[in-house]
Length: 454
Image (cartoon, rainbow, N blue to C red; front, side, top):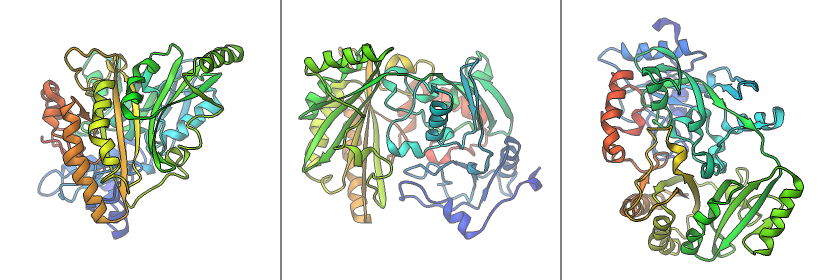
């Protein structure tokens, strides 16, 4: 089996596999494997397991959209990188089954576009901000896949029906999320499981008819506390399917805005609701989402990009906790350490009930006497053009902002630049995580870039 795969050990291939979006971590692997099938993935894992001196790490790379070496062989054991871009790209829509089967190396933006414009269908949940559109389906699902649709539908991974995967032990499996047996355990563990148990080689996702007659509204606030005080009220709107908070430094001052999208069954119904909302002065209605003042910060083509990208992605238990964090930590920092780094903050309401089917995704516990149907993702996206500025960001976001997030009950969403204390993050789930790892990746070859202490 080992003779059937090629390992590219050229300096160019090794260097390319040591790059990622964040530009902080660079660890060249021994070599790069470019599989074209699940059988090739299994063969590569067999080579890694049989390596002279013992098994070596295998990192799975889609588009390299990682901030801190998550898709690299970071522990310097000279492992292999699976470059999944070599898989044949497939997208097969089954309208009768309300599903689509895609290869994991498809960009999520291309899946969304094909569904909407060729089949008049859509995913129940999807990411909303520009950088995630560069993410592949496989990367999105292993991290969870939060977005502006999470206000109602939860993460993208909650809408996976089935997977073809290759486990760390080399078994090729077709698993269904609704299977109550061991294969279902594997399917559910992979979703939001940070690539610890298996390599995804094919995905079946649920689809729904495309929403029609949308109305976009922007609701502006002058400070972060008022911004978050309105959050639950807006999220509870009966027609709201899409909601995202945007905080950016625009025209010399900080702007806070909620973009809320409601959908209606007819144009007349939509226009009536829009007029009613305008009379109530709740929204500033627009013909298109986001608005020109935020466009440079949310549009992929024009978005600012620094040499070093440092992101902190936190999950906060409630709107009140999120408001406290913004007020106490980030508003002062906006005028200090963060002032020159062009930070963009994105806030996403997450319907807690929509995460019930994704057991590996760990939402923060609600605080005592503070019930809430929604928790909140807050992404602090910042960067620097030199290493000194990058170090300042690392010190502030990693050593000040992240502890402050924990102090108000927050968890970390580990698609950013801060390394988690994984046992503390998972809490009572950590024993289950260890058991799943032992069962499906007993040599601990996969997902080493997340630095879980197995």
